[in-house]
Image (cartoon, rainbow, N blue to C red; front, side):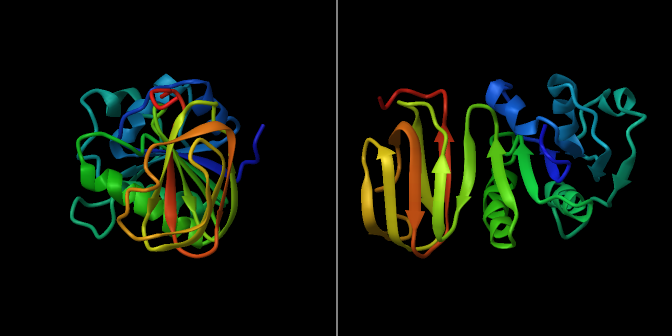
Length: 217
């Protein structure tokens, strides 16, 4: 069981539950952000607090989770419900954040905000992973990162700045100290040959993996 400094934050995007998702949240404390509460029953979890302005809460969900403590905010605010829920997790002692339902959904702007926020959270020293079940993502900052991916599954490195000294091992298309321009597509649609080792000298990026997608094998 994981330490209670791991928090799963339920966001409003799509979710397909598999063993990888369940492993990520094992032993985690849970906080729901507005409509992300709809994932709680499917995951078999009980959030300790429900954060948001509740403008995207599906009909009937409020009644079903009437006993869950709420932290309401006005609709006109400076932060998304997801960011408020994440900061609440940090205030409660989170060192590791699992952002559930962080892809897809009706709002592309919210999904993109989650991806960018994950990188800034990593720069603040938090361990972060995002998942929808179909896709997973982790921030990439200077240093070494190892990814446990099934052989043949797709992954991409999305640069949020120019990247210096990017190396990939355990991939169909390896790299050795490559410099990648911001916006370049060179690091899209690589294929894991098993566990992947990534090293970066400078820059910031996100690694997005599709553990069940073997179309590139």
